[in-house]
Length: 349
Image 1 (cartoon, rainbow, N blue to C red):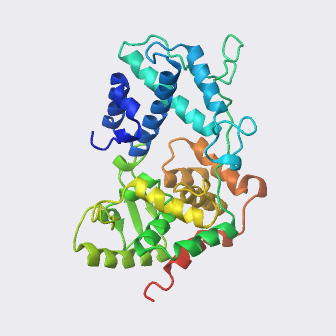
Image 2 (image 1 turned 60 degrees about the horizontal axis):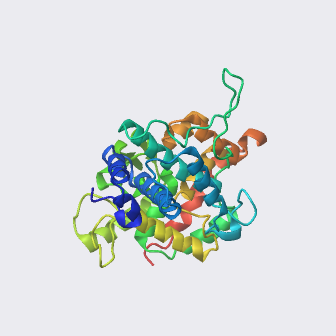
């Protein structure tokens, strides 16, 4: 249980069944991102219960409705840059949905343990059933396309990344090329890469759906990788295992954490004025959109991304504009090569 960061969600640690559920989530092999998301969300819900003097083990649906209303009334930490359900207030809809999902799964766990009988969160249905009635969920079911930077914004990002360390430049290029989730990126080990064929084997235990896959990376990324490996050997000797290592005094030589990588990307985003927009997941969104622009079909993109459902992949088809603009010119197949070629320049100046 050493990977669970209880200091981030202390109330979860206090409530016995909440603590056991988070421990179970980790034990079944969910990635650290998911464990952290569930822990934060459950802590938020338990804090609401404490403030309202609600026993979370006996809460009813009207208590959950009160919690939803509370989330809708809060100041949004991202300020005016986010569109809310109502003007000026409320957490982002996607945030509220994530938090409610965690609470619902927590009550599912309590039901399995025989502590609860009916889940107070429930599951909304947006299609008519046999009774002819529509049961709506606690939140509207809006679907937003992922945000990706414009060409001008991307060029500004690249200019900032070029000033980063060789490790950060290599990680940035590798994440875009392979459309990696951050957990997949920081978990890469040296043997996972085949430099001769410029391929990466993503191990099943590091993926979201627990299915391994193979992705390719381009020549510019290969040059960055070679440069980083030389730097790595100089700094850490012949140390094997995880590819990307921390160079901080506190964790020198340890695997770089997902939180450290997120902070690095947050710093880059701030420098180009894209706070709360450009994240570690943006490179994945952009890469998959570029593949759609280049004419890859939905099955090819889904396999490359490791998507379990093609509905998710369809977002990138829409985002690319391909479904309304038709096939793009064959030259677009090389668009992704331009994305990171600048990072490979002047490596040894």
